[in-house]
Amino acid sequence: MTRNQHLEFQLDPSVIHLNHAAVAPWPQRCVQAVTQFALENGAMGSTNYLSWLTIEKKLKNQLKQLINASSVDDIALVKNTSEALSFVAYGLDWNPGDNIVSSNIEFPSNRIPWQSLASQGVEFRQANLETNKTPELSLFSKVDANTRLITISSVQFAAGQHLNLEMIGDFCRQQGILFCIDAIQSLGAFKFDAQRYHADFVMADGHKWMCGPEGLGVFYSHPDARKQLKLTQYGWHMIKDTHDYENQPWEAHTSAQRFECGSPNMLGIHALSASLSLLLEIGIDNVEQMVLANARHLAAKIQQNKHLILLSAAPSQLNSGIVLFKHKTLPKKHLYHYLQRHKVLCAMRGEGIRFSPHFYNTVEQLDHALKIVSEATTL
Image (cartoon, rainbow, N blue to C red; front, top):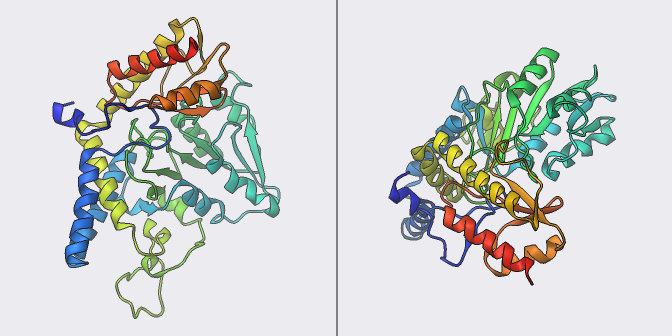
């Protein structure tokens, strides 16, 4: 990483941002893209709209690269992960008695859409990932002849468990089951390969590890799986001849654009494209190595602290950017509020405090955050 890339994040010196698994700060090129877009719009209106469309195409190509989709036609821009999950939940034709298999530690986004299908006689099965030799086998133990889909987070939001997506994808392919991945805790921090995982559907918001704004996400659908989804939203932007406004009769796009029913979020598009340009410039392989190094540094220091208990994986086994810990005697709310007051941005998740550093966090910042943890425990 060059010095200029390191300087992309210009947070106030008082802030230590260890909350990328929730909402990330923007790099300077994202701030500049938003500022420039606003100034241009204010001065010239939509004069340059055609150039804005080129940024939209660029963003889809960036997301194609990030996910390793086979075609940009498999990429749709959506409002958020929940919208994309709902496209799948309400796009498939269900039969009473069908079931969906997931884990019992999913974020609500990857639980509520599926549970809402109970009125159609669809069962949502939540596997305890610790009941078998591996978490993947725990998932598979819930599968039977009526299972239509497995839906899982690539990385669990609380303790950061990183599942073997290739193993799950192979199983789904062999069993004729659809595979849906909530990749919000992976994209932007870790390598991801939709093709190698045999993923049918992948979705993620841009405001976490991708360091973009809230309100814009990605929805990947494999062409064969996409054909199985009936549309649940309609509008001018999802038809084949998008800019033929007299198009009658109309036909929906065969590409993933069929899920983009209305006008694009151009401000968000400019912002997210700028943020992704930084990550892709550094290289996701390099970003992953730096994220893991920071997370493992934190985990090792926490493990050495006699007052703290590491709740996520041990440093040598840690394979995500999430580090979860708790104090042996101090209530987590007390510790969380102390950290927030001292500008260490983090989250309360599960039984403890979640730190989630990104590639640009320095060892000095990590050690200072842990020093503040120690100060809280002496009060």
